[in-house]
Image (cartoon, rainbow, N blue to C red; front, side, top):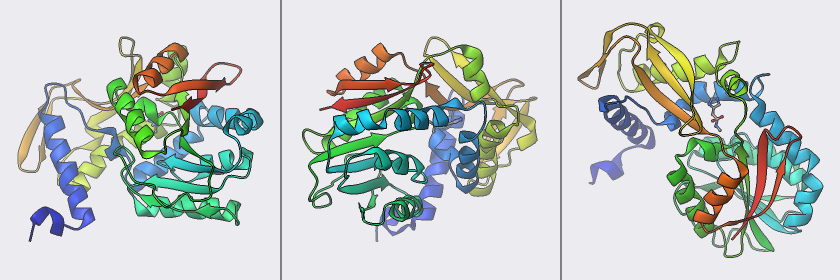
Length: 319
Ligand code: AVI
């Protein structure tokens, strides 16, 4: 039997984590993909981040969806099949669906069935008569919606939260292109994106006073110890949020407090004092840069809504 095919999903996931850790820690500038921040504890900590006073993106986006809801609903029209890419706990979908005019069906897409179930049940509870059809798929790859959205007039992709900012710009373009392929021809997409702003506001959002973002970042080392057999001394690292002006992004780093060696999967990785592991990038865009991103992916921005402080944007893309 093919070894890869016979592996259970948890084992395949662990193997992928080890492979990414070995590659990332061997790089000249140590790095780890941000997707590994989200184990159960990381997901819990991220939910806590979204409620912090310093973390403006979530409440600002929710405010835009509420305030501009009627205009968004008019632009989208009735009978939409709402396809959410990575629905989280379904809270943003509830916000949007409350505003839309008679949505036909809600299709949350995620690779993790347990998260999908949580989002689907939250939406089903809020809208008992709405059809809810979870789609188990990696939303960063093309997926098939055939037969799932009958009765709808249009497909509306929904990608809130500025998760687009966690992709490198080239990856963001590739994601938007693939999303266009997965949604039906003539589809639209509602995209939440965080905007460039004063650096102290950004720094505080990613390094809060209560230390929740620090715990979220450091949890990655705990995860590597538990799931990849590493021996990180978590207290020997500290969280740092850095503004990279050239790339227009906030970077999260885990910085070694002193020189040390760490073992992982039979390899030894040396850290100098002050050396860091880059664990996440969160790109911040100007509206003209977002337009260029959409253009490059063959979408057109039909409308953009922002808050009064121009902190965050929600754009309607047309294919
Ligand atoms: C999920 N993503 C949009 C968050 C962000 O703002 O980049 C993740 C996050 N990292 C630190 N705080 C929040």
